[in-house]
Image: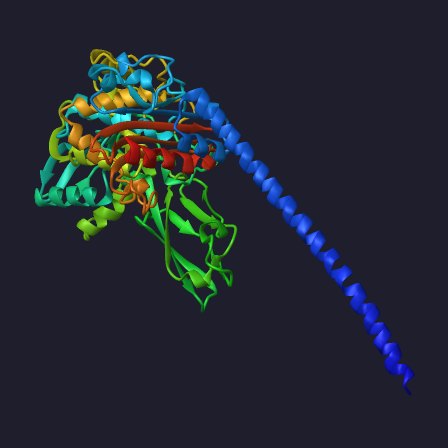
Length: 536
């Protein structure tokens, strides 16, 4: 009877003697992994530190920024930067020197200090600026046209008014108004009705002679995205549709409607799903398909709509509609609202206004000072492209070549030579457009000295407050202290604008990232803005 406890006691002693070894082994293995991870992290940190030190030594870049560049993982040649106090003369800055705030060679003499670069890194390297190029286009337009300039859209008639019916054809002449919205056309039709025109016995003809090209575009394969809308002399509503999705549990489908309500637009059934409302826009798999002649456009869905989303809206480009059917659809819908009893059926074609036509109505866009705010704060591509084309109007015809020549002539007249400059459409939605960071700073310096400087600066997003910068640098010292235009393409991230430093000085800044993984440079660009605000 006493043997069992002895055996148990012996076994317990054996187990207790083995336990420390087992525990020690597990702890040793876990500790080894932890030590290995810590060693790798330390080695990575040390490598990044060495890389940052090399960048700082080679370029004269401040340590903080060199560390941010090293942390981004970007090769140095993928990043370009130029910063200079506003009012300084860029042309007198020495080329090839290491330039930063701590550079002793740039501290001698007031004139040299004023012309010196605060920061420069690959500053004269020709790079793709993406939407930052809009700054050059909007500055040139403000300088050439003035902040008060307005685009005009005109309605002409050939024939005469008899008992409230216009007997003859009516012409809508486009003036490359970059912001001609549905409500503006509605007002125009109401004014026409106020003049006694309640019906039309004739055709509606569209005069796009200022810019007759209305080709559909497919930049980066995103044809339905609103940013792909092409310029049009008679562009309505950015040629966009707002689609509304309203789940209907009874039919297990989503009711879909559009604004504007185009008469030839039809929707396929969109089934409901129980999926989470995360990436619902991709989940529905929306696409447009043009039907047989006369049967309009059908909106098809390859996916389903999550019922949990409730009512949602999505803006898309009506890319399956060519320019005339879209414009005619909007016009027909509005005409019926303004003239409920009208029997007029919109018949459309393209034609130039004949010399004997009567001017019935003229509509003016908002002043240019307001248009450039939409372009720069919200990076509106088609508005920038249409403004660029306005710069290229010669003898009643717009051309990209003439716009390019006019902008270069403006820069040359102001003594600004940018040999690296490549213009395409003026919006930055291009693989071809090029300018250097230093070149963009020269444009900013030119705009700073111009009479339209207040309108130009106010057109840019205020950091951490509005526009495309509203969610960036929140709780940073730079929040509310810089007007910065952003640029984004699949291989580009960029910023440019003005920074008010804590010293009270204002700086012109341009920083570009050109790389296959540009998002890794976003934190770097934000760090540049913050550094200039704190240290400038």
